[in-house]
Amino acid sequence: MSSEAEKSEQAAAAGAGDTGEPTIFDKIIAKQIPADIIYEDEEALAFRDINPQAPVHFLVIPKHRNGLTQLSKATEANEQVLGHLLLVAGRVAKQEGCTRGFRVVINDGPDGCQSVYHVHLHVMGGRKLNWPPG
Ligand code: TR5
Image 1 (cartoon, rainbow, N blue to C red):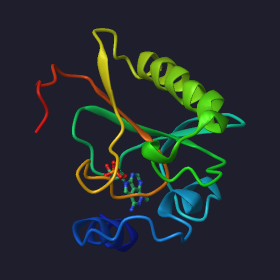
Image 2 (cartoon, helix red, strand yellow):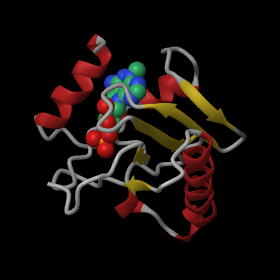
Image 3 (cartoon, protein in one colour):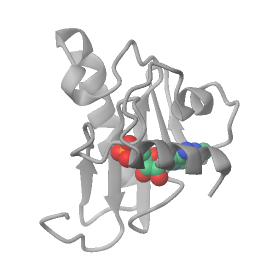
Image 4 (cartoon, protein in one colour):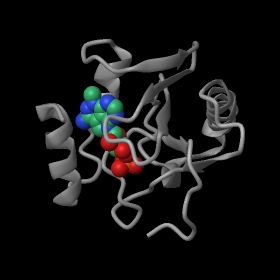
């Protein structure tokens, strides 16, 4: 894992939460930091998770965060983009070969184990997933 990724995980472990600073995802959007991008449009970016928890594990993020650090801060103003992220999640899961299904997760805040405060969807598949999650 890169030192940037380690820093992000350490911040989460320390319960740092939303710092108001640009996140690692802003740097990925700006192509300042490389990521394995598998889908991109005007509003959304999907890239493989650096620490995959399933054979298919990618993240879908809004390219324009507009203050939306986490789902619990969402308002009606974010409704369209959140819907778009879900549509992208489903389309890219299909593109990635998840024909038998997949899971979409949004971690929110310290109890949700959120480590990057730029709202994002985890999409996981490629094997039978366990339920309930830990
Ligand atoms: O814990 P939450 O829900 O906030 O999820 C953040 C996710 O971002 C984790 O699953 C990390 O593995 C993932 N992550 C963190 C970094 C990173 C990444 N995925 C792809 N590329 C990444 N880079 C380049 N750097 C990271 N710090």
